[in-house]
Structures are given as structure tokens and as C-alpha cells.
Length: 358
Image (tube, rainbow, N blue to C red; front, side, top):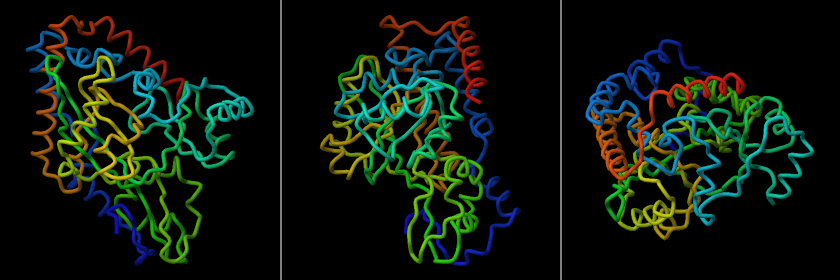
């Protein structure tokens, strides 16, 4: 059984509050972002001093706004990804009516289900799989920022593949692979989806986030041994289990990812979130990129349950140093660092954007 599939055994025995809090404390993968990253901030400041630029990260990917740390447009990134490796995607303005949206859907040549997500956004914010018109109407009512309409890629394997290439080198490297196992439940013929979710500590911890996109399923009662995918979005904060897939890294995989990365002008450091039918197909270059994240991405294999905290910090520091080296080389080749005034302008924009979005 998959790690993230919830067994129906003892489905009426809900997780105690004490166990939930103890898990949050003792399993660092559930720590708040600011708490977990606190020690890394000091290393970042040291690298900033060495670069003589607080925002040195902005030079890591000249082909992505701000290097891809924050505020970058997903649509701009998709426009630079080779067509053979991306799903059908179009940018939609907020406030679009249902009829006009359906026309766009027809133009794109896709049907239900499909993916909707904000053009600018992080950590799965407002990313939804839309299965019917009712869900579509609900989404159109709550989204107030430009968003992407994207074809749903129905391939079994979803991975996050971390890649970098030094600007003065010909070939790149893959340093991390995370295998994403979506939140699922297995029915007993009696319990609702919500009842089944409440017997697993991972799903209980992320239940509020799960409800935002999958609450419409909570009252459903799966039949005996029926496996139901509750969350189709590979996001850790929605209960997806991140598994260390570094053993999957091969020369063929590196070459396949490197080949695509080189076709993106100005991309040197980040993570491909992709789907494929098999690892062998990925190695042959047959995969679809769901998102390309720049320097704000993480080597997400560190979130494997039970991964040692000291090893996680070591990996983050190693990747931060690589980013620093990539940015310094790009800077030496003529890419400017973001200035303080530009950073202030970006922060103001994001505050306004988030107010509108929420």
C-alpha cells in the first residue's frame, strides 16, 4: 500500500489531539516554514556578504523574473518551455464569466478535468483540479487574480527533479528527486472520506488545506477496498507524502533533464515538477512539465518522513551555496543583482496582489 494511502482499519478511531501536537513537534517536516528555515537565514546572510548583494539570488536565473524566488509569472515561464514538454495552458483574466470561460476551454481543446491555478502563487495556493461545472463556478467566484487554465496530465508518476548548470559549463546536474504520493483513502464500505481521513495523522494535520479543495468529497462513502485519491495536487501542505527518490538518478535521467533545461534561455537553477508514465520514459525524454520553479525551489526529497534534520540542513546549505555560485557567475557575465529599490517595489506589488487574491 502507498505510504499516503489511508487504511480503513479502525476507521472510527480518530487521532487524539495530543498525538497531533506531538507529531507536529517531533516531525520537523510539519514545522512552520519560518521555524524550520531559521538557521539557514544566517548562512544566507553570510553568502550575501560574500556577494556584496542582499538579493544575489536574483541573478541565478536571468530568464526568470527575480530568479524565481518570488513574484514570478508562471505563464511567462511556460512560454519558454519547449512545447513538447508542457501541457496546454492559457492565461485567464479574473472576473471572466462562465460562458466566456467555456469558450476558452473549447479553444484549448480540453475537457473536464483540468487544472486552475494563479499565475503568481506559491505552495499550492488556489491550485485546484476541476472535475465539473459546479466546481468551476465556485472557483471563478473566489479567484480575483489572473490564473492559468491548464490541461490535466493523467500520468501515474509525479516527481520533483532538482537541476542546476553552472553558466560557464556545458552540462548540468540533477541533485535531488522527490517522488510524490498523493493523499488517498481506502474504503471499508461504511465510513465517509472524512472519517477515513481522521484516522491518519498526516491527513489530520493538513485537513484544513485538504478541505479547501476536496471538501466536496468528505461525505462520500467509498466501497470496500475502493481507493480514492482525495488530493490530486502534489503539494506537501495538502497531505502529499514526499519520498526520497535520489536512487532514481541515472545518467540517462540527467541527460534528459539537461537537454530540456538548455532549451530554456537563462535557466540555471531550480526544480522541474513533472509527470511521466514511467522512469524509463522519463529517461527517454518523454515527460510533461507541470511547473518549473526557479531559485525559490527546494530539494524536496528532504521531506521524506523520518529524514534526519541535520541532513536536511546540510542539503539546503549545499544547494544554497550552489545557487550563490551560479548567481555570481551570471553576475560576472553581466546579469545585475536586484537592487533594494526594486525589492521594495516587488514587495509592494505582492502585498497588493495578495490583498486582491484573498
